[in-house]
Image (cartoon, rainbow over all chains, first blue to last red; front, top):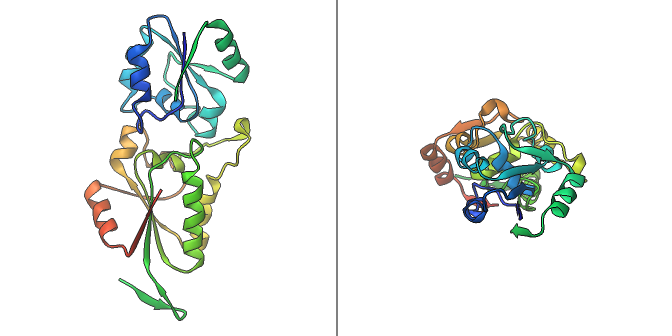
Length: 99
Length: 127
């Protein structure tokens, strides 16, 4: 399963809910305002680091760059471009968009 | 609270920004309205709270999204005599940011200081 999260973790509980239901080994792709969750040293960084022990977390590069977050991404989060987004969709049977 | 300027009445306007840029249209709309207030020679202050602080983050590059990067406009606010920019300290800290990560000079304030700023306004517009 691929999960996508497009809301800021500080403004919505979307990421928290997603992570609560994301099974071990699934993939979580942060897009749009969701990419703020990828930044180091934030109030949600620990939650994300804990999640990295059981799920793969990706962030869309263009959305990070638009928001000036490209140099703040924590270790363990993989960056993807739009083609990488498509690859992730193809590689997983189901996509759940946590809008 | 009000004073006369050029025959008109200047009121104290505070624009409160609580949304990140790009994910929604609020941040860009707020900036437009701030500039309108300034064009009418009002006494303009701008507050950044919560995800609103992200509007001021350095290094924004929207080429990959094909949307307008409006962050340079914050640097032009000074030309419109808008130089009272207030940023909530707690919001910055929660996001791993400090004053040096921001595009323009701002005043970083505590919640109680922000409350006083809000209390001293004639008009508050929230985005």
